[in-house]
Length: 239
Image 1 (cartoon, rainbow, N blue to C red):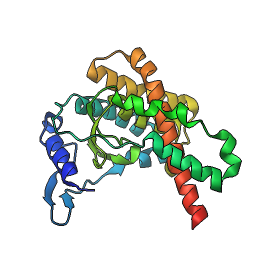
Image 2: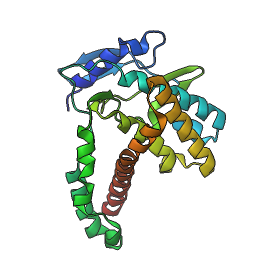
Image 3: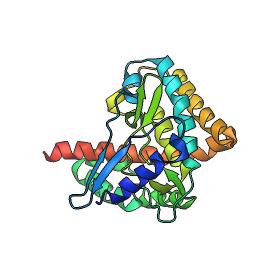
Image 4: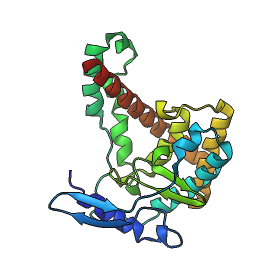
């Protein structure tokens, strides 16, 4: 895929009001169309996923507040007419995956949902068109002392704002094997509340209504995480 759109989005965000006071995204240096190469500044610091794995509750809370505020500002940026659609796995992708699971992992067949029940995942993508990051998980959030930065805009584009919220929120609900959570369920719930409260306050929207709307997006995130996990397991089986 061409990196030109990624370059354009990174350049737009870097020069937007989101970075007016302090730079929070990498500076795009240049794009070489002949070789489809995108160059941008290195972002030093510690990923939020590492802070989570270190069990550093204080640092995690502080980072989640910044994450909510940053995301609210991103979602309020003006939408460009030629904004590409953000990346997301469609229902047909689950259909292909489920077929493979039935073949290679038949013991899981009884646990698979009917494809028709997954069609809601495509419909929620049509609810609104906002500039979203589309991969807002802890590994793409970098903390450098008092600086908060976000990286990896390959999937960025137009989509529903709550998908970004659900991605980070869901990582605390359905942790990845890369950052096994040592926090209690109570602590994890507190992290989720801190992040969502920060976002709602910065965007001036109702917390309770947003939390209710978030549920179906969390279902989508959970399905995506299952999809990536199964693809990884199937790759191991085939290797």
